[in-house]
Each structure stands twice: as C-alpha cells, then as structure tokens.
Length: 53
Image (cartoon, rainbow, N blue to C red; front, top):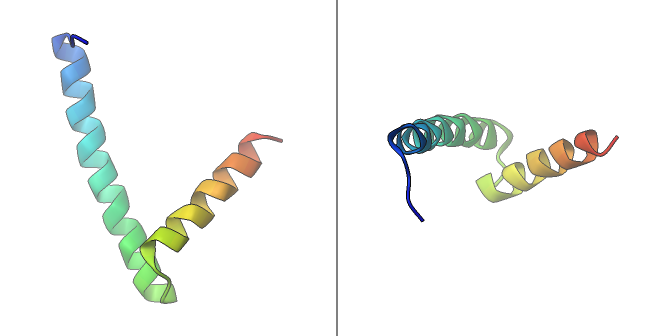
C-alpha cells in the first residue's frame, strides 16, 4: 500500500489528535476513577448507539 504526501500528513495529524484525545480520556478516567479502557468502551458504545438512531 502506497501513501501520497497528503495521506501521510493526515495520518500524522490523526496520531497527534488521538494522543490528545487519549490524554483527555485519561483525565476523565482518573476523575471518575474508571479504568481508561472501560471509559473508552463506554464512549464508543455511546457513539455507536447514537450513530445507529
């Protein structure tokens, strides 16, 4: 699979955004004393159910 330059740049941006998102969720998880994976699973379930409406 080959990437052109814009795809490569987009993937780097996505990696940075996901790191920021992960940090935000870690803060939320620590505030609510939930394991990060449980919080992410809950958020994903919410997104999936809202998207299915």
